[in-house]
Structure formats: C-alpha cells, structure tokens
Image 1 (cartoon, one colour):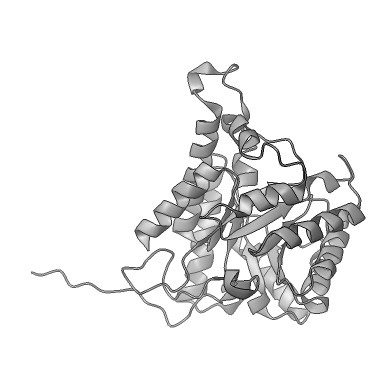
Image 2 (tube, one colour):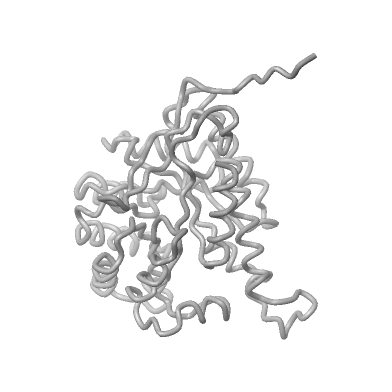
Length: 312
C-alpha cells in the first residue's frame, strides 16, 4: 500500500510580531504548523537568532573574550556582535544595573542603549538585571529613549507587568516580552493580565522560561510543546504569541560551560563545552516551540543558523 501523506495544518496560527524598522526588520511567528514542520506546510518566517551582549565586559570564556577584544564599551560589543552574518537581532543585557551588584545608574544604562542604537542597524531587544523595581524603571526610560526603533523589552513579569507593559507598549509603542516560570497556566495568566490592560496581544512575545539542557530542561520542553499545541490545535488566542527564549544567559552559567579546563581536564576545552551546551539547548527549544533564541557564542550562532537553513 502506498504511503499517503496527511499534513497536519491548523486553522489557527501564531501571531506575527515585527521588531526593528526598515529592511533589517524581522518578523517572528505567523506559522499554522508546529515548529519546523515545513513538510506539513510552508513556514514564511524562519526562526530567528539573536546575540546576547552584556554591559559587563567580563566574558564567560576565553573564546568570547577573544571575539570582543578591543571593544571597550557596550556599543562597541553590540556593533561587533551585529556584524555577524547569521545574527538577526541584538539583545543588550544590563547586568551591571543590579542594585545588589554594581548598581549602574538608569541614566548610564539609557546612554548605553542610545549609543547601541546609533551603531546597530538590526532590531534591538533589551534585557534587564532581574531586579523588579530597577527593571521597571529601566525599561520605561529605555523605551522612551529608543522610541521609534520598535524594540522588545524582556521582560514583563507577574510582579512588574503593569509598569513595564504600560511604559513600553502603551506609552512608547514598543513590544514587550511576557516572562513566566515554565508553566503553561502562568504563561496564559500573564498574557491575559497584560491584554486586559489594553495591550494588543500582537505586541507581545512570550518567554515561557528557560534552562540549560540537563538542568530541569524537560519542564521547558513540556511547556513549549503544550503552549504551541494549545495555540494551534485549540485555537487559544491567549497563547498565540511567538516565543523568544534567552538560551545563552542560561547555558553559559552552568558548570559545564564555566569550569576551566585546568580544573576538570577530563571535560576538555571550555569553549567547546559551552558551545555544545548552547547548541543542544537552542536546538531543542526551536524544535519544541521557540520562534527565536538568544545565544552568546558566534560558533553556536553559526551552527544553529546552519541547522535552521537545513530544516527550512
């Protein structure tokens, strides 16, 4: 009996969300099939790859230090990162703004963001320091300073979604990432709360949570899969926002990526380990639901770009 192909195409689809302006703008989402299922139907917008650039000049590996050698400022590093062919957008991360760390001022962060916008022509995503009160003010000020650039701020959480969404989207016309803790119900609830404020769901991306492969990652995969299934098969419009996953900040923080070879020679080269961890995690995220991943290492970005090109 001949094989009869039965494509699984849904009447529902993932929202399209555009970041940036001009010919370098990118669009996330839009598909009405599961991630990378091009054998079921064409996917107009391939998954996108961002690069994570911190305002902290200290790099987690020798390879990254060598890549950014000579880059004295965040804007220098962002420009170098954006020059990579396979990078679709740049994520600037204000780690030094943490009040429990360097406590970099909001004014200095805004100045850095403006400097980045002057030298980078690709879309910009802004990540904070994970301190709720500091991030709320930071996202508002950066959204104002970069008005018209169509940036995405990561992230609006249950604790601060009102302030972040109100300033970024409603006041300054930016896009917002809704961050939840690896649970489909929490992701849905946060999207509902943000849209009830008057924010159009098509201005929202989701960060449903992330972890490095091997570190509770099965929960991440399960959540990604369940969110996409509900969005497409159940036509749940509260979960039809595209998903963006910050992979690099997770994978380059675990011991497999940070331990120097001198401490664990049996593990081999540190950069290779870090890249392996980043690639494995990003590939799984893209397979199960992420519409965009944010990575740190140029080698990881090149490998994931090749994977996406081969599957699309």
